[in-house]
Length: 433
Image: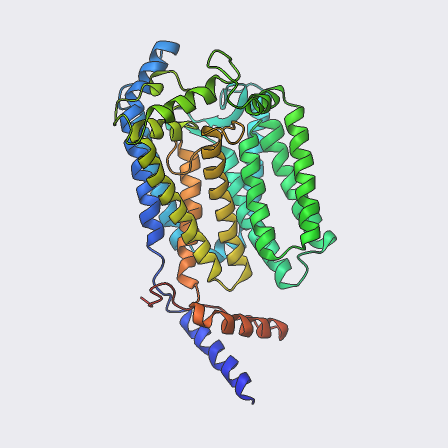
């Protein structure tokens, strides 16, 4: 046997044997996620009483001062449980049952649509949209988040298989099937639930995966053009979306007296009022009823008022650090299915951060989308934490940069011979546990 062949064989044996000794995962992922959750909890503690007071005065409800803080604490604990669960459930099971996860997410959205049309009590309507199941004392559940996770798992497995077969650019075998799945998802999310922000997040998941899988540039541009055309149609056909676009195009020529620009104007006031170091915890004025959705979509503006410019920079640095850890894990994985899983989580997480922050500072039209791990809302936090937990698990199977090309060479050689082997090596620290 040639020297190169013996080297590949030896490397393959090392890779196969090392899979039984998973190396240490990337604990920085936990650190950054925990810091963001902690900041979100502090914000809920600070503005929860103000939010409760606003709702009690406006709707005659009876929320206690600690209601939102307690709810956020419960959501955080459930999110940590979801993270831990996805960190220990073998990723192979997630991929194996990915089609069932997708079907479950689609079925949940279909059930919500039927319940909404039938005006059943289980379908919770808010601001003209039906996006949640009303679970009574247990709170609410947003099936769109289930659909995101199901689509993430299914697309990673499907596109990873097609990429391994060298058919990622095959229109009939790859692009049309994934296009049908995405179109069906968009039907529920954008058309029925009227949630364009979540629709963009779903698109970002698929776009990230296609890019990493190596879709042809020409095909990619055609897909992008088609997505923009369909997105424009969704905006034009919805008056409230057109109002947001026209308000955005007016730039600074808007006023708080204009109902269409009221939200974004108060978001800018909140951020500007924070100055360099903020007004301090519990001293927010905009959270007393001026800024809509202060604990949800607008929480970034409230943090700007509370912590100031310096605080926002620190928070954005933590987000950036977490996103970079996701990319680092993806770069050091060999199996394409696993790379696509992480790429999808990156697209999901990154889309939420960019859209929320950009809309709050006025460089993107206002859209309703949560700020990951910070906004009030259990379903979003739970499923994003679950997705990050999956990445944390995959960080155990990354390959050291010095061996990455060799392992990839072996994998390509093995796949051509019809031999499937498992990969593993240590990473950053790159010491095995």
